[in-house]
Image 1 (cartoon, one colour):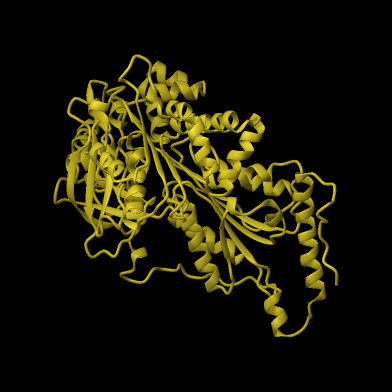
Image 2: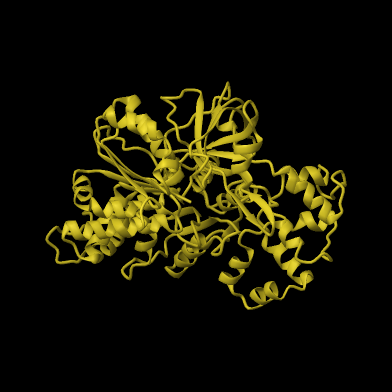
Length: 585
């Protein structure tokens, strides 16, 4: 039977070819199915449609959930394929029959980096209809941000618009996602028909073997001992940047350059004491529905630095504060953010001395205390048995009180040398040095964004990789804020660091940032791209990453002689080839 295809000389545009490829691939599948035998046990096995589990992730959480779903699917007899969303072109996606999607939301309602191109393609006017597809979407997000689970909501709605059949309702998970995600996976897989058309029975959660590396997780962290804490910024700096080292002992924990370390903090005991005094509650008071007394819950179970939305609304109803009432009732998000900026739970309670809650009501409005993820700043080849972090200890004064970041000051001030912090590794397979040791690498990481690039450089040094390495680094003042200056100088002398461009914003009247250095060296940067260089960005997502992205597009357009549209396509091609990767937060 002849197989339909598109002749090479057919007069179709690129978009028309994408649509036709999807249509013909589906037709091929149906012709092959029609030509297959329809009896016998082998036919029953062949009748099972392939299961594709796709993920969109920024930090690796959605990928981990997708792999959990795949493990459960295998236990049910499926043979799932797990792929990143940007690893699937729209023609291939269009002929998938059973699709499970796990996607996180990045920033203020944005698609994660590895779903950027997929979402763009899914919204193209030439995208084919998907009537033959059965799908389910699990969304991961954080109710502390606007656009909660927006990426999942958008994909779920778009698939429905294209005619796909939803087999399980979308579930939107907050930061404490493990339990609802596991329940959703069971339900979604149970809704997939097996070869006979019967729904398979639910399967128990797949647990890692005792002692396996995967056994250490957010739910079961490893108590790693702190072996070194030293300040990288000078005492005269406006910043407090710390280098922190942990011993992994006999944990069996492993990591790779590019991964993150999750650290589970303990709240500031001074803030816990102040909250109990303000609410006139005893630390040993029992709290209904919880195994531990109030003092322990406030210390290590609930978030007391950043107020939850529920708590803000409850305080507004009691505070008699005109400014807070005005911004809430007028739905002015920017004004509310400005009002809350720098304030913690105690600051809001102090708006009115009459505000009071009992223990159960107060705890019921708090969010779970979450781990903080830090980009690992060491290579396991250079520092076996240890893991390093580069941490900015966040401190500020507001409402006549000193405040501090929950985890950063825990690491800088409270855990101490010889103390232990509960940690686990978050794999980030989408952020790795080039697989080809000869490939050039461009790294852009101001401030603590240097962390993974210290690891990348150590990795390349340890493996003897021959590829050229170019780092853009910046901060406020060279004299006070040049993190790892001695190490970078040694790597430059040794030839590991081929180029180092610095941008210290406060050392001159006009502020200079890493994106300015990129533009100044745009011709060379574009030449590196043409030579196959990969570009990596790490740091602040709200401003720096966007400014760097704009500079990259501008450089490609200017030095490549391309229109803005063609420059955007060039950068998209870098994304497709996994040569433009970001670890931003």
